[in-house]
Image (cartoon, chains in turn blue, green):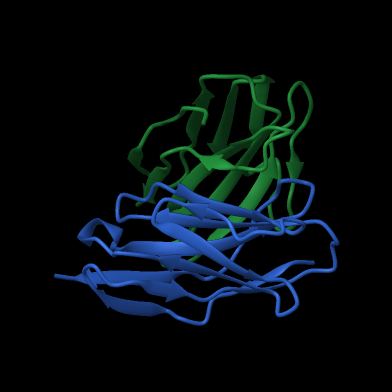
Amino acid sequence: AQKITQTQPGMFVQEKEAVTLDCTYDTSDPSYGLFWYKQPSSGEMIFLIYQGSYDQQNATEGRYSLNFQKARKSANLVISASQLGDSAMYFCAMSANDYKLSFGAGTTVTVRA
Amino acid sequence: SAVISQKPSRDICQRGTSLTIQCQVDSQVTMMFWYRQQPGQSLTLIATANQGSEATYESGFVIDKFPISRPNLTFSTLTVSNMSPEDSSIYLCSVGDRGSEKLFFGSGTQLSVL
């Protein structure tokens, strides 16, 4: 069984600053993938970034980077240079080789001008 | 990434009726899944939509309540049957392809049952 934990229900960040969203996971699968999704108030789920368990380097996608610490079982998302449009719910998720996603509870990010 | 169209985007339905949600992808994909997001909650996997065969349901979800079709590699439907207010949720389809690690979602269907 897989478990994803996001301990921050909500966070405030000043525009143009960076914010780190925490995510820890637990799995017995040797091979797995870690995902972050953004869900704005419209309800859609927007793919942000992916990290494979065997990837040596941390994933980056534009202003998003994933701080992957395998020994600590953490996969924190860093959003740099926050923008007002970054205000949304953010979900951490993981999948084993079956492509089924298990989600954390989510973190609400509010960017202040 | 694949373009995923989900219809309807929202609907308000009466108790006891059924609603069919469509998920159309602009390219063939290996994997298609259906998720439910109850108000204020995270996403929960309902089932894997299998092409040409019966869907594989997760614990707590049954075919009579959530029948799923997948006639080909680009299209799937989820029906929410005999609806009650507890079925009010966002329903999302997700697609993935072997050889690509990324999993993408449709825009979601916001369902309210009165």
